[in-house]
Length: 344
Image 1 (tube, helix red, strand yellow):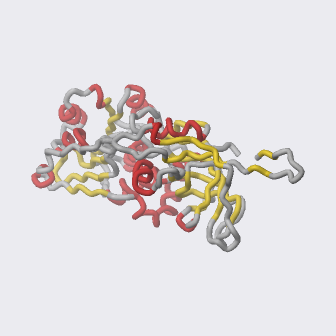
Image 2 (cartoon, helix red, strand yellow; image 1 turned 135 degrees about the vertical axis):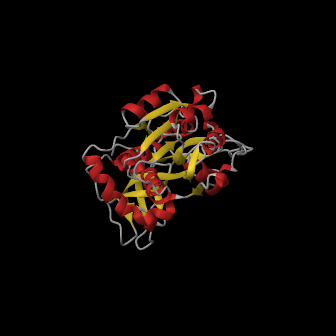
Image 3 (cartoon, one colour; image 1 turned 90 degrees about the vertical axis):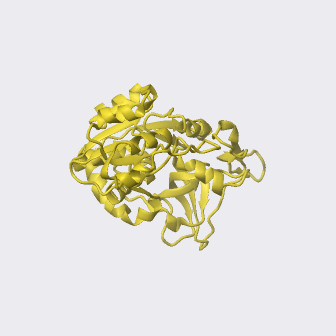
């Protein structure tokens, strides 16, 4: 906050923002976004039902691209999940100082007009940035996708693509704690080493070094795959379909290999769903948010007891946010990508 030198001593309220500058066609690029500073900050009037927040941490997820493409007007700040502190409240359920998790905007200060969609953060004995990942949408996605959609059984063989990402690393650890055999794929030697040595996967491989994905999966799963947690799509899905066990389950969480393509790739081995009686089901985490309290009851003790490892890739400064977000789609990040807007 700055003060102009004048007799009136007028306060200048600035608000740094990441603006949707140019329509996305194909891959998201930094040129689609622009960092600007507005001379105005939003206000939450009394009884308006809205809250005005100071954004602290913003999540960089593949899901951001859908929010940008389908719910953002050109010239507006882009939306995304974040952790924020309430500065002004016109809603009876929120007060100044409350910490919240939910959809906000990529800017220093945001007006949230429907705060009932936010979760109030009650447990602050863990890093607040965890609520953008481990204790936020990615963590809830991993929990619901694995336990509610995959229908796991102890001893199941589980394969996870994009396994070092915010969701994949947690699915693998949930599966190991449940008693499954777990293999993941990732895009670098560093990430493969993390899967095996930090996150406790039984095995992992670098898909970029495999000339034949079918052969790689047969090497890791000589008797086949019970559960495939799908984050990638394309050639990986085709190879997995050849290696599913009878009555296997494929849980479709995402298809990051397809998001930036103007023409999506086809899948050629779907007939295996019939021959092997495989159940393939997509899901969105919003359908399971009613389980969030149960999720916290399960995961918070596991964090305190050191049963879950977690890795973040934190970029400091909103001005560096566009590069961090674009990097998620090429696998530049190692661990959950977060933008720190403010240290408070």
